[in-house]
Amino acid sequence: MAKGMREIKRQVKSTQNMKQITKAMEMVAASKLRRSQEAAQAARPYAEKIQEVVSSIAAGSKGTKNPILVSREIKKTGYLVITSDRGLAGGYNANLLRKWMQTVRERHSSKDEYTVFVVGRKGRDFMKKRDIPVIGEVTGLSDSPIFADIKELASLAVNNYVDGKYDELYIVYNKFHNAISQEPVLNRLLPLDMGEGSVQTVNYEYEPSPEEVLDVLLPKYAETLIFSALLEAKASEFGAKMTAMGNATRNATEMIARYTLMYNRARQASITQEISEIVAGANAQS
Image (cartoon, rainbow, N blue to C red; front, side, top):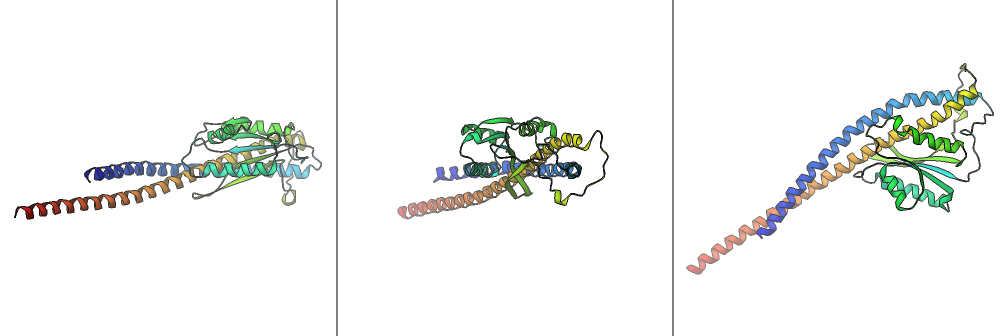
């Protein structure tokens, strides 16, 4: 009985240590989540303004031949998949990759029909295990990424589309709703849909010409959309981590209560047995 009580006490201590770790990780994730949300909001005005300018030029330049705006026959598809570098984030990566794999199985019959760019070690390792060719990757991003971190990959993805290496580009990431809700989404990035029906044209003066300005701005706009998705994915990652660590902390609390109850019952049984043995010994001597 003593051995059983010592084991239970050891389990209680171990679970308490685990609870301290998960609680600390939950607080760290909450702090990083707030900073990620602020970063995403700070990048929004630039993205909105460049969209306004690009939409205005595109609406005023009828018949533009820029490949970023022109739809063509789909023979090959590009995917840019944004995952995390580390785990302990619940179903953050698993749900996203499962949705992407389901889409690939439905749309493609062979690996020659699509190509992949990956952000994050989890996505890279997932592709390697399944022998899926990755033509561009970025890993080891900081918790507060900047545009320079993703610029090379974003430029490669856009330029490959312009060069005709694939006919559409999708971006796959976790859309942030709130700290407990992240939705895996697969959005078409290229060709760009400027929504001409709702565009209000502004009378800008361009030098040298609207078409040449559009040729410069369109790739930058596409790269900006990729960076905005990365910032939103980061916020989703920290929201998922905060939720996962919160659940782990609550589970640890329940386990401690259960182990404590088991310890108290074992201790009570031990005391009862000792009393019974004392009484039996006293009766035997009388």
